[in-house]
Each structure stands twice: as structure tokens, then as C-alpha cells.
Length: 269
Length: 269
Image 1 (cartoon, rainbow over the protein chains, first blue to last red):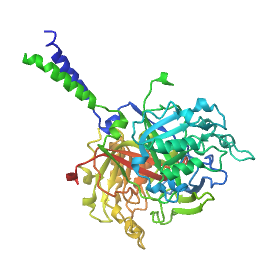
Image 2: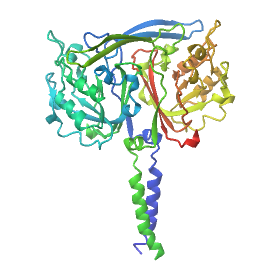
Image 3: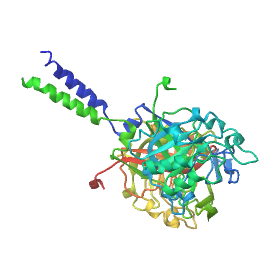
Image 4: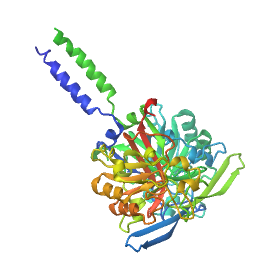
């Protein structure tokens, strides 16, 4: 009798499961379980560019109230490709690499892994990322395409360009990635389609040979620089939307970078 | 006995349902049921701008093989805010409206509805969209925020700027939206957060008073212009990723517009 009583319980459970197992994209995205997180610095007169690059220029062209009382305003702008939150296309350091406009969407919408190294970096501008720092990571992407962003904890310095870039008479000084890690990613982790950093370059500020750029470009990976971490986000489970301005022949371009992440309970932070 | 036999069947069914009812975002996005569709024109020397606007300028700054044989290239660019595939922020026509950099992500990642009017327009540059053309639509968004894009069938003319804009001595001539429809959207459909068109302006080319821009800006909606329909996409069921360059004080900005749509079987086309 007790065994028979399981039947209605089972049927009810099946019904509930089917009712809530709606995996339509719009339902999943907008059911309240996910949040949209902007990882992009605004483009304005504080946007950080490399010292010899063309800064973001913003020119008010028209701005007035029309005869019927309505407003009209429009501007022009100009910039180098490689400032603020931006993408480096493989063509930046590889003559046979893809331009910005050629990078396919299936490399720009991918699972996102954050390697949070902030506590290891501990605000040291001389920190260089080696393989041994990453033993704990890169085991969870199951061989599917993904973007990995290395978080050095540098966004907090972005309001101070001199500090953020480590500007001195000797040049620049901020954390970065070693050639060892770049080789390791491109040879051992073929599924990684791009890398990101929350500093002004994937190479350490003091390295003027740009080995990481060269290795990544040759392997066809893109690089995202000046990722903005305004807040903590989960290391796993987010999706990256890497949406560059579609400059057809761009070696790089301004980027709108958004993460969609499962909402976390407060104790995670 | 037959009744009891239902128990293992039920349990098996529950197990199968739970196994496949994985509504994790990455699993839904990358399970092969969805495709990513770029609705964005590239920025190059063919990008269409309004006649008096600043065209997209692309300047090769450096491009050479370095001593170690590796390549290095970088460019500068400049443009008006309102050319190619771009967004108009409410501030474009409303002094109290939001700048590009202020539009929140929950208005930029939304369900997408395509109102395909191509057959009604039938290549007529004098077509103006009125309410009676739309009786069949706008009933399926269930009150949630959404973007509606009006497809006039104009992308096929984009390689011919004169034809696309309807350039003549009298000015411009291409299809657009009536003030009637703009008022209807902003008063009756509060859930619509923005509109898009596959022509150079939401207002008809011949209308120099820009009533649709004024109505939309005042109501806080954004406008997307020069949406690129390279191919057919479903009218319902897609999600829009409206990812403008984050120009802090922009009245508009270059936009990467991507739709994520359920894959359709060939007989839909």
C-alpha cells in the first residue's frame, strides 16, 4: 500500500519538474537568477591610453534648443584603437591574424572564467604571473571555448593614471603575464579563445618586447585590456559578451564587455 | 500490480526529465539550439553617415615588421556618433534624457521582436509606417521589457549610399515610422525600452522635423538605426544584445548589435 502511494507523489514531482524546467533562453536570462555586470570603463576625458597613443577626444558639434522647444545635440569623437576597455585583434601582432571585424561571434560569446589573483598580487606592480600561480585553476572549462580573465586587482587604481600605469622616468610598471603562461595557454588549452586583464597590457608594464601579445596573436587568440572590475564576480558560471566596435580592419577596438552571472548569495562576498 | 508497475516508470521519467532540464545559462546558450546573428554593419570607408555628419575616418598609424620578425600594427579612428549601426541615446533629442553611458544594461539585454514589414514596404522609399500596418504584432511580449526592430527590407540597398538614403536635390527619401506609431508605442506599450530600424533614421527620410526622435527621446526610449539584416531571423524568440561603445556623455555611439535566436528548421525560410 505504501509502495502504491508513491505513484501520485511521483506524478506530482514529474509535473513540477516539467513546469519549472523551461530552458528557453529568454526565460533563463530574465527569470531573476542572473545579473548583467558591466566590465567596461566609460570613454571620457579620464579614459586611460598608452602614453604615446591618441587619447579619446570628444567634440561637441551641435547642442541647442530648437524653435519648437525640443533639444538637439550630437558629437564627434576620435581615439586610438588601444585605449580604455578594448580588444586586441590577432592582427595587432600577427600579419596573418584576424582583424577585429573578422573575429566570429562564437569566439565573442563564450563561458567566462575569472582567475582572481588579487591576493597573490597584493598591489605589487612588479608581479608577474607564472604557471605555479595557476595550479588551482583552468580545470573547469570542460574543453569548450572560453575566455579567461586574469584579475590582478588593479581596477581600484584606475582613477589615478600615474599609479595605474606605474608611470616613471623608466617607463611603465604594472602586473602582467609571463611568456610561460602564454605558451601554456596556447599549447595546452586550445579551447581558450581569448584572455583578458584588468591592467593596461597583457604583458607586464616593464616588458617592452610584448612576448604575450606575440604568442597570443600568433595562436589566433584575442586579448582584452583594461577590464573593469567595479565589484566581485563569480570565478565560474558567468558568460562573457565581448562586443567590440566592429572596425572592419581594426587591429583593436573599443569594447563593451559584459558578464552575465548567476546571482550569488551575500555570503559569497 | 499494473498500478504498482507505474512506480519505476515514473521514477525513470523523473530522472530523465531532471537530467535534461538543465537551465544553466551556459548550457542553454551553447547546447546547439541557439545561433548568434550579427545585425551590425562594419565600420570602414563604405559605412553610411548622414550627409552633413563626420564619416568614419581610419588612419594607419604604425604597421611594420619588428627586428625579431614579428608584426606590429595600430590605427587611429574618428567619426560622428550617428553613423553606421548606432544607438541614439535619449539625450540626442531630450536635454533631460540619458547619455549613452547612462543607459542601464537591463535595457540593453532584452527580448527582441522583429516587425518584418518588407512585403508591405515593397521597396517604396515613400512608405510610412502607421498603426494599421501593425495590427498583427505587439501581442507577444507579455508586458516584459523588449526591443522592437522594424524591418523595412532596406539592408539590401546598403552597398549603394545614394539609393539607401534616397539622396536627391530635395534631400533624403527612405521609409520610416509615423508620429502616430511613436505615440502609440510610448503610451500603450510601456514595456518597449527601445526601437530599431534597418534604415538611416527612425523618421522617414523626407521628414525634417524628426517627430519620432522627439517622442522617443522624451519617453526615455533609445533608437537603433542602420540595423543590418543580412539574412532572415525569427520575429519572436530572439534576445537582443545592444552593446554600444560606452561613450560617457554620448548622444549616440557605434553599436554592436547581436541577436541570439533559436535555430529554425529550413522550412521556416
